[in-house]
Length: 221
Image (cartoon, rainbow, N blue to C red; front, side, top):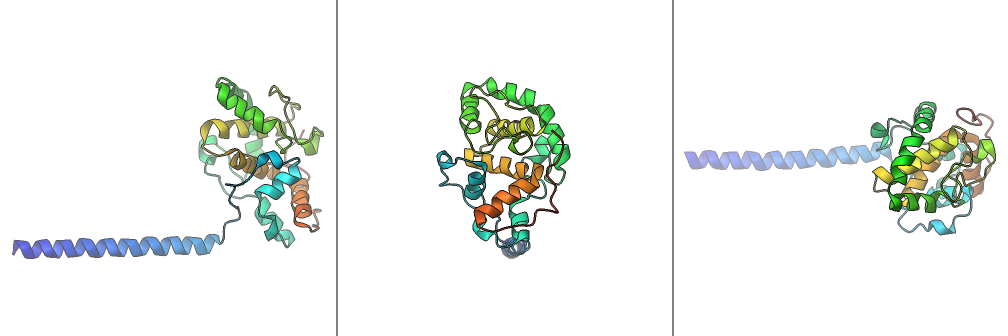
């Protein structure tokens, strides 16, 4: 009798495992259907040394070949929701103004933390002092580089320290590659300067877009 009960128990466990596996597969499949194909492409082979402008960063980091219409450009270049680091850092794509103000205030402490580690600081300088677009170029005219060669901000408007605070924080607190960090910065830059960044995306895709309905920028200089 005891052996029979053991067999029944083993059978029930096996059935439970099978049912659980089926449910996991079904959930993942349904989730993929809802999400659709990924809006972002692999960055494994991206060479940042070839980038010479913000427009080139957009073309390199985002799937501009998928941009056929105005809505495509908005869907691909303007992020929504909360990034995987958002909860810890306290930012959400859905509230760019709040994120802008928070990141600007955090800049001094985040900078000090990275600067204390020479390896991290060198990595930051190497990434941010090149014309890849980590700057407030659309409101202050500093161009695609927002810092000097020694890491000091070229402009003190809210957007510049905010973008650099994000760059520094991701370098220190994640295992993102430089290309992944740059893409995150470009997402936030698009939220801060929707009109200009969407224009760059459309130019890179070889099309035109009516940016009249898009705001010039979020926050002030």
